[in-house]
Length: 119
Image 1 (cartoon, helix red, strand yellow):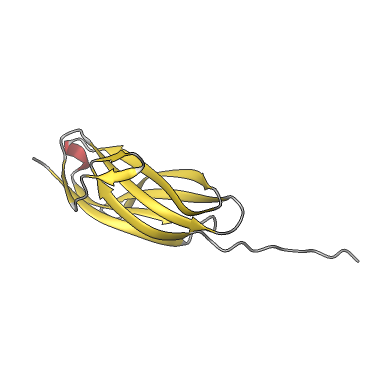
Image 2 (cartoon, rainbow, N blue to C red):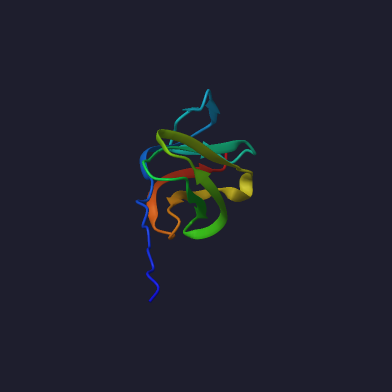
């Protein structure tokens, strides 16, 4: 008989998330809930706690409820892992945006919602 051991890792926990105009020294700057659709990027920054082994997360960008982009990323063991993603916002990207942080099993860990408006 073969014994199968399955180790379930606890998903990383998002302790903070926000949208802003940039990241300086691994800290989000220009925090807002509304951004101009003028070609400048919007950054989404998250701080995660991961007590287990290195794990994957996925950033999912949705515009008006429709998925536009996703990016997988590894998160190391840490009580304050800081990471971010960004997207340039030209006029055609005007709308309501939701950016989700998802666990390896695609469960939504946390999300941030913001508006991109034509100037």
